Amino acid sequence: MKLPLSLLSLSVIFASSTAFSATETFRAEVTVQNTVVLTKDSDLNFGTIRAVADPSGTDRARLTVNATPNASPISVSSNNTENALFAVIEDGEPAAFIVSEAVPNAILSITEPTQTQLEFEDGQDTDRPDFEIGNWLFVITSGPNANANYNSGTPNLQVAQDGTVSFNIGASLDTSDRTTTKPYADGVYAGTFQIEVAY
Image (cartoon, rainbow, N blue to C red):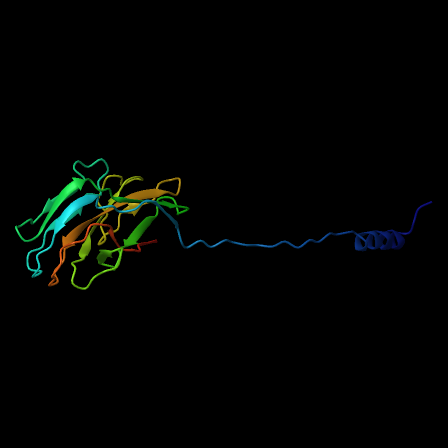
């Protein structure tokens, strides 16, 4: 039996209007990490020394710790006079840092410390000399620019493909420029310093 054409059309329309569909929601996200991870491997150590400060603060001797890996010697004294001097008994060592979780091949910048004094840990005496630290030197020890000095004017601390880069810090230590009446005391002179590494 043939169905009328009008009834056939109606059945097609009915079938298409009852088709099933499914929906689902989903979330989009992104994680922002604008900071890198900075890990200290070792502290800056000026070694064991004999130190004499000029009581007038006029003459100033200098002790420099080289940041270059495997440097020999590591500690070098200069500007020594009868009134102010450094003599190295035991070599020091540069501070060492590792940067991780950074963007591969990114260029990072280093902000050097602003603190400048090393003071006697057993209590600084106003009549006793302290030390002044400065002339910070950063040497890149891994990554594309390994063995290069860090350039603050045109930063060149470049991250490797694995997201890491490392560097050493050296510096110079000067005898006091203050008028003092006592010599350096035997013991540890120290200070706490902060550096920043950023994109």
